[in-house]
Image 1 (cartoon, helix red, strand yellow):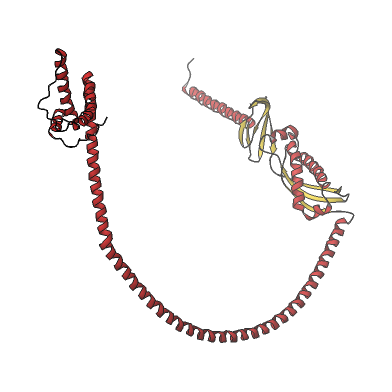
Image 2 (cartoon, helix red, strand yellow):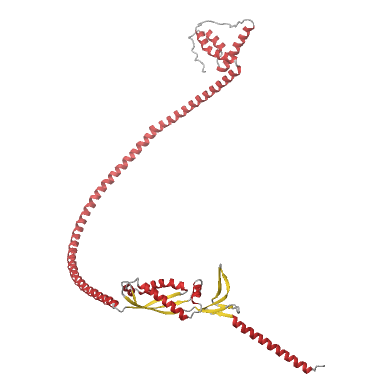
Length: 434
């Protein structure tokens, strides 16, 4: 069956309207659902979502805590409770509470407490006060504070309670804070407003104090009058003392003037004597300088005439001695070298060296023997041997003579000829050094 355009337009418009209505209903339902499950927490509140288990560190809890902000509640599984964190002002008072000493006192004060906003104290609060009204919480806190107040009063005397309320309040706060923390509450401030008693003990203390004050005032007045009288006579005494001191000062000035005149005259005499002494000192100083100049002149003359020539002779003698010592040292070194060479030669020649050494020992003996010969004239010295052995002995003697001449500088044959030609006294030949 064909459909007209008008009908199609009407159906399309109705579909759009239905779709819009469905969309609006869905958005409304969504907003309603969100308002039911979305919770916003104010800064002075705390939200407790209980029903589902959560893990905090190693601890498992059946609730979660939200302070400030927002959170979603799981429908059908979680329940939400609110706790107010604002201060709770509590009036604290006790009647006829016995203090130390058995005196009943009445104390009135005011305290500010609140629910803590941080863990772990908040956990204690939730375990004890979740679902309770603020009035019930205030009642429990008031009863706790009054119990602490009675306990503190029992440790203090009425005088201590009345005289230092700040110390009393501090002690009470320290006592109550522990108990309130166990309950999950925080004590902000605690002030004591009034302390009284029904037996007139504090009034008696006040009258006693007033009497003490009046007594102290009378004592102070009497002390002031005595001090004024003492000051008066003290001033009179000072005036008299000042007068006598002035007279003493006048006499002292007069004495000082006379002393000054005598001192001036004495100074003039001393100056004159000092001038004479200084003149004599100057003359003696001039004489001393002249004598010192003469001493210096004599010292320089002696230096030029005696000391310097003696010093020159000493230096000349030292140089001569050094020359002689150097000569002796050189001769000794030369002799040592010659002896070293002779020793080496003896060591190289072997048996011939020993013969030369024996001949060197025989030389002084020969010199003495030749001295006893007198005018004996030797034209020729011939050494005879026996066969080949004689020739060997002659050769050995000639060789030894040459070695002695080379080693010691002594010509044996020449010395024998000289001794034969010169009949003089026998010469003494020093023995050769070993």
